[in-house]
Image (cartoon, rainbow, N blue to C red):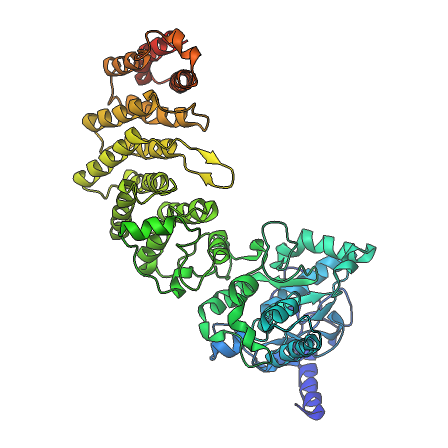
Length: 601
């Protein structure tokens, strides 16, 4: 505890400095130092429309730390086990409900500008809580723990802890430890429905992001389901808080401990459901401008073996949703990594990330399969995040998955292998890295898959996409655009397309399959790798009603009607695209396509 006399001496020094050096008034676009040094006539301002410096430490040459990076003991600063006077800045008393609150420097600077803007709009923001130490949080937690233990309903530590964690964090896990989070005006959601409260909340919703603040514990709207209950008073300064959050995820030694009730820690997903259970809009994205930090990829923290080629293991895994998730992580953690735009801080780990993502391509969970696994692979490859070695390793894993029919009992794995391979093929199209032999192997595998698809499911409610025909067509499309592909390869692609659209077994394609199959032909024809004679010959073969004696018979069966629908949709897609492109080379499609559409009723 520092003495009153020491404080008076320091105030006197600060006052003298203010008399000699301070500018007359802070402005909305001034520096952080100016914002916190607003004064009139050499005296500390009491004008409520302008921020003033309450913490005299600023004028004694205190360094402005970049936190948490500049603090020597990362675990202590993350857990709030520090003296705030050593690292944070004092909140001006007239900004708050009491003196003696502290916050991180940049948080306080941004809040000062935000507070001024709100006052100009007739809205008063008042801080009622800022930095909270480990000991302070422990006192809150243990008080609630002991009170709950008096109630017979809470005999199990896990259930007791989860009830407390509706609104109170375990000591060591609170965002208030970081000095980046503030509670404003009232600790009661209902207050923000009053006339005054609604004005405050509406203003913050409209303007807080302009100053870097975000409502971390937002309403449960489907995007945030885990974690604490909504807190309309709790706002976080994301540029700094995002660095704390990323550091916290990496610092396994920061796990909560040292308080009454910590026996429940191992029974609760305290990290993924609570520390990370925030509004996804409050996650820093790799594309954001500023000094924040995205969440590290889960693979950095999880010991994970490379994907096994053992068919029996993969087949068993594919039947269980979430089996691909790295040990120690959860579905929500992977989703949050996705929402942060798949950040990768160490390029040496790219191969590991891709291996993990590839392993989830057959997962029954559509969010993991499509959004995380395919989305992550696509993002890494399209942002040039993978080198030749990583691309080559991924290609081999995907080719193995594409060929493994026995290892795809639910029908998700092979279609998504084809879709991911289309992204691999795109990288080679944009900047060639495959040998001619590798490219032909990929083309042969893709053409064989498209010709042989017999699982025609597109989208199924509750299961998501399979879409094997369309995904295979996407792979062939990327190959058809590759300048290294010649006339021989073009015929292999075209043959596969005609096999897929001409099959008698397929149902009516209603998920855009005909248009997706048409695209490889359009690009190959535009590149003049297919000629009119070849195209017309294939179209005439499609127009043959065999094994039916005539097309009139298609109206007598569902199979016949499906075949008719698919052929006409395919022909229409070709003709419409060719006409719209106004390319002379595409005229080669006209005779055969017109014959198909005239022949098939």
